[in-house]
Image (cartoon, rainbow, N blue to C red; front, side, top):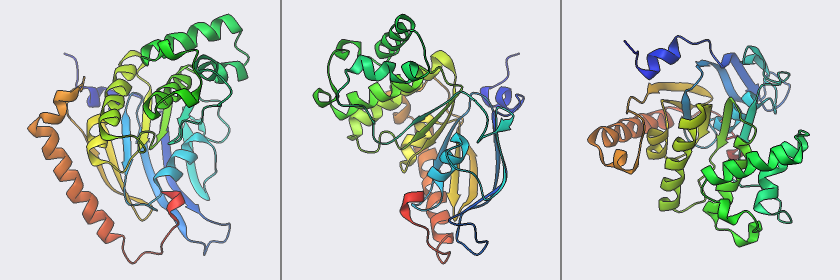
Length: 276
């Protein structure tokens, strides 16, 4: 008998491990802590959303997993190697699409492959395939100034996926988009994930977005995990998922927990919003 997705993932070795991770602003032990003793595991294939009030450390978690910054103390492993040294196959998607304005859509999509020395024919084929999957192959010869916000983000997503990552880190990539475009991109993101099953960490301020996308939601408060919650809605998730009573019930439940966690963090020393 085939086990449920969450049960199958729990049997796999973790792709990401954080053990007692603390991150401070400076080297002084008296400096304010962005993260304070964070510990969790992520199994291959999980889609984990990080939510919480501004300043709780969500984006810092992504940067630590990406190896862009080192923890003050504690251990971070990605694919069983230290995050700051491992050549693990990771891709990072930011809120800004970060496209080079002088390059065409196709050239932007090929850029990471070019930097890795992939031959021109191979990188063009892979980039065009991802642009097709992202439904923007017809825009391949345009420049970023000719694209909408949603189209730019599709290019950025296609470019990240050309690396064929095992781990995708997304820092509020759809926050600047209108609600309808955002919902469409949520659906397309999950459709792309069905093809390759990468593990994802997704930072968002939208509870509904987190519920729609995730297998699991971590609510952060004052640099710690206040709640670690499974999302047992079946995949594939489509526009009709948002109409289901179970979806609305989860959004309400997690919204209440988020408000409680935010309230309990009051009185802690404030951290700048740039740490999110």
